Length: 180
Length: 124
Image (cartoon, rainbow over all chains, first blue to last red; front, side, top):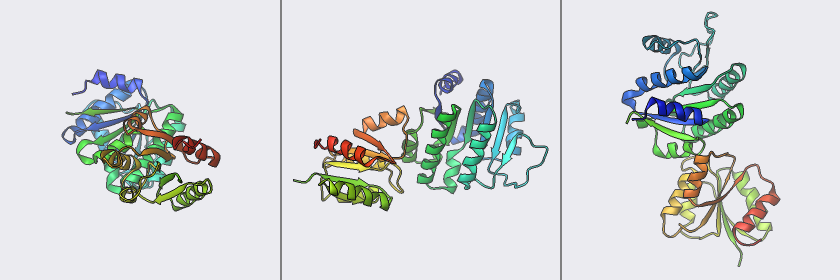
């Protein structure tokens, strides 16, 4: 089991991290990562996995303040976000990779983020093939290096093939395996 | 005897371009449009160098190279990546483990590509 202090050090010392999470501990580890990242600075939380409202509930249950978060939500599929929601951008769907990339880059350029948490590449694999995901991650990591913002890309251990993980590892600085 | 290079890329235009460049330089060029086709052709020919794209549908360049290294008949063939990708230090370590001799980024200058390939096959 990787200790929280070690993860913190890895995040501080590296720019792009691939974090492998066991399915059984998925929510638990996402909460840990969210707490950790928000303790270091502002976080762009990109959700392909669960809707904004569900994330707010999860954060509230674990006493994570959302004032350090901005969300890009590819799940809710709301074209017209409420005016009251200032910390979220909805996009049309998880398969809209160009829109997703543009939203991520626009958000990073218009805010002062310490990091981006991408939840998750495994879910993206439902909508796109391995090659598209590799290209997407390459594009994303290249841009984040230029922007000097940290990127934490989450994958579910059981939900992604080992060949894709090896291909993605060509672009990241470190792979962290959580949850045994 | 002509030096042989195999070019592996899913982009037909690039295959044709690289083929034309190296045929003019006196090389024999074997094109392959996928990792699977590359492995199949390696049963018949042994090139002096393989120029391998990293991002291809199906088997990636990394996976194809891994299979080349695992086969006693092909394990010693020189492989260079010809790719748009910019690799991290982890990626460079992986290339070292796969004994990838060089990586040339796309887009490339024709003269630079020729110069590097000639050096890799001992023709410079």
